[in-house]
Length: 312
Image 1 (cartoon, rainbow, N blue to C red):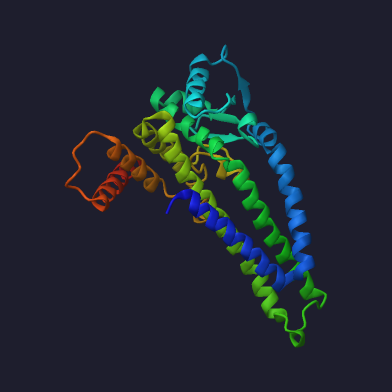
Image 2 (image 1 turned 180 degrees about the vertical axis):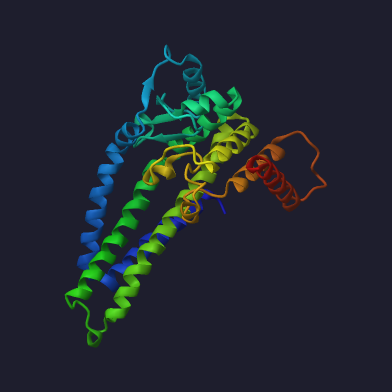
């Protein structure tokens, strides 16, 4: 199933989930109020989150005169992706990582850490930046905002349900869920919404890997970069806020066991395996006697072996 179709299904599922939970917990009026409140919060986030997160990480904007090689790489990749030239920022942290933000391609920003520029080879930097520009091309900021709005509406409805328990808002005789039902639903509903939201985020990472590989025309470079960034993220060297962890190319909190349980990123070894599968399918090697399943298994095993070596 394509990542675009998967994202559409998950967004639809989240919308249906809101309608269902809204009727159960807050009724039609509660559901409408929750959507408006969540929409207002996330509309502000959509318009101003780029400025907030760049300030949070003390990122500084650079021009072609400041960082000519970095600027030229971004300019080339933006041309390959048929995108306007984004603004470029550098984050003063030694752990390698990167993210893209901005409400649309005309207001896009790509940010990389000092560590990424110092540790990566040029082709690996190209691979990382191509991935981030793919997020811009695929309108992932908008998709994330929609998903956050819907998930936020569910959480507000859950809060309404909890308050209704204290004020006697449920009546078993009128066909309601009852006090116990409201309590259980108010706990489980936000968790379910969050899980769907994280699934959407993971599907967008796969899509960005695939699109970025086309922009850079070198999927192996991105796979190699992910291995290096993964090693540093396991050591927890990037001082990242959990609220922004989903923005980075590799989850900077993946070294924390509790955070990894609710990761917004797919397993790194799976991403690397897929990228090396793209490389194999696009190469001139004779793979006619190897089935698609065998190639996928070999790619996954190669990624796991490399990941094991890096994690030692």
